[in-house]
Amino acid sequence: MLAPALNAQYAGSNVTGDRGLIAIDKVGNQVRFYDPRTLKEVKAFAGPEPTVHELTFSSDRRFAFAPLYGDGIYGSNKEPNNKILIIDLDRQEAGGLIDLGDCLAPHGMVGTRDGKLWVVSDLVNKLLLVDPAAKKIETAYAIPGKGSHFVVSLPDESKLYVSNKEADVAVFDVARRSFLPSIPVGRPGVAAGNGSGSEGLTPTPDGKRLLVADNDLSDIRVIDTATDREIDRVPLVMHPKTNVKRSRLMKLMFAPDASVLVAVSYASGLAWVIDASDYRRQTAIAVAKGPFGIAFTPDSRTALIASHDSGLLTAIDVQTKTVTAAYDGGNGIECLAYY
Image 1: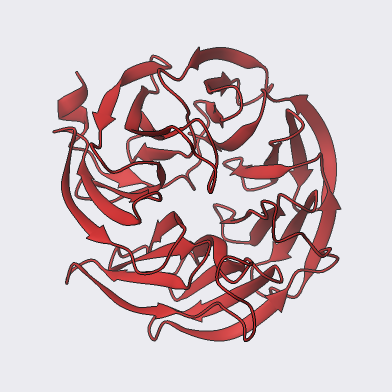
Image 2: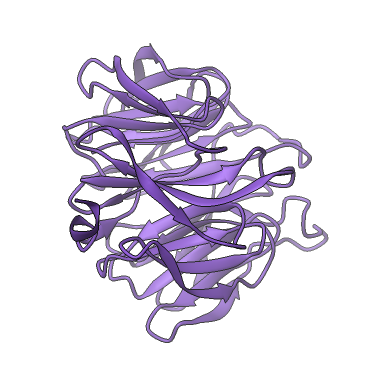
């Protein structure tokens, strides 16, 4: 039943729907499902091996994919894994594994309309083109830089962008199958590995801009995707100083209707609701410790924030910019999405 369906188009993790809510609980190595209306957990199953991390979807929302990263985190992954878990969303159960061979520590992923997956293997710094139907790697490309972690695609699928924790943002031309010059995110006097890289990133819905979370000062870099040059740098209000020796993960996500951008910063305990027409119009909102994941309801009214360190899901009304409720949320959810 799986292979024919995998001929469908694919979409990234920024999807939304009303059938269900899936969450990847990294700390508990669990795939969790919630009722999308009540947010009560309805089912969960354990990752077959350590440890489930990120998430992407098939465009028909029949399948999701979660990399099995290993037993650790970036920089301390002593027993890295090399597989991608296929998740049957109709049955809410595991649907098989894709073995990536010697490409260890798969993390960021994005799907494309040709039915393939682009996957970042951060321990070997490679960008993989994976055929889920055949369950194999088609091609692997060496990523310039160090600490590759997340990958996103422009809406027209002409380019991929890879964030590097310890280097500049890598740019991949899909048609040419080659990397273009990287986008600088370092700062004078800041050595690689000391916060000079980037974290979460997302294209604008029209594909004209790329927003990148700066790993040093927690600014949002605004990149013109036609030239791949920085055109603006937007500080996040009230963001505290953070320790370069600790995880400073940040993520960014647009609402389905493109009206707002939500950002979360793991080290700060804050989420930001940002006007998509003016990134300097921001409201900082305190949430539970360790905010990590973002999901939007289909009507774009509510952003659900998963706090990795607190086992809590916090609902934010993005119009009133207030917390409306909190729900029990696993052991340590890294990402989640309505589908």
